[in-house]
Image 1 (cartoon, rainbow, N blue to C red):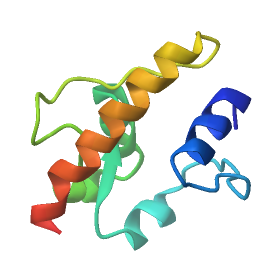
Image 2: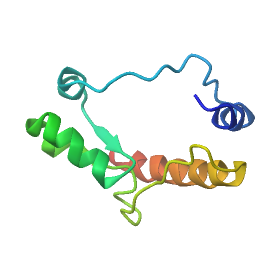
Image 3: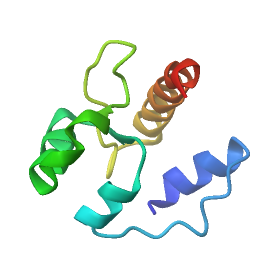
Length: 98
């Protein structure tokens, strides 16, 4: 994980030290009850990988503006802070539906 992202998470009480990225597989998608993507291209790629998950793959910002949440990789800390806020709002917007 990017060091800036890790630091920002820690400052917000989240331990990201155990996070490890993995390649998404159809079996991961099948096992999930809900799959949220940060960008429309992510959701489209997931549906292409496993078309049968179409009814459980959505944008994280579905209940807000539905726009992409950009990847702040290799940007200044302020970009990470902005994206963190967008993610938090997106997560909060899903809570009534879970």
